[in-house]
Image 1 (cartoon, rainbow, N blue to C red):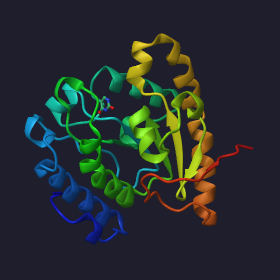
Image 2 (image 1 turned 30 degrees about the horizontal axis):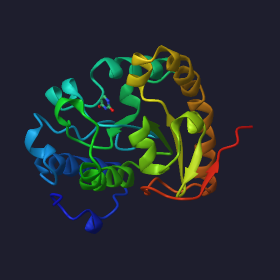
Image 3 (image 1 turned 90 degrees about the vertical axis):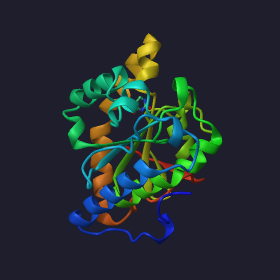
Length: 226
Ligand code: URA
């Protein structure tokens, strides 16, 4: 069971309310025993960033260093993520960084479907609180959360609207570290983020795009830039 009933939680409005809601969520994740990972982890890794971040990056789950420190993307993949952010004029403190699952699977194995299911409410709640204009999925588990069954090789770098939220699938930075041929595509995909964000801002102003509340969803519209 989750530490509180997410369906009953009100959607926060002001920045203070959003910050308070994130603190409450972090405490809930820290106490969560909804799956066995809650027993094997060293520290839970809820995610971090501004409560009103315009962009949310969503990875797979904590690895060794994240589990030790309780913070997302602090290992080699995190260093590369920071370089990629810098390449488009962003710092990691400008964006929200989260994961599909909040606790490290032993030995960094892939997360199990039941672990992903047990954890899913926490990410939904983060999306409802932060309401990012742009969601960037990092890797296939994160992509599957929003666009199930979509191959990353086809979808990467293209923004799509999923239940009113703009989602941009990207390769996982760790994949690019292990497979050199993915480095260029991920760098190229990152360069598209500022234009996608501009478009998402325009949509938000015109009321076309709704804040990101959704989990998996079917029909998606592709963002056309210029
Ligand atoms: N990989 C992820 O997907 N998430 C992290 O937090 C670190 C590495």
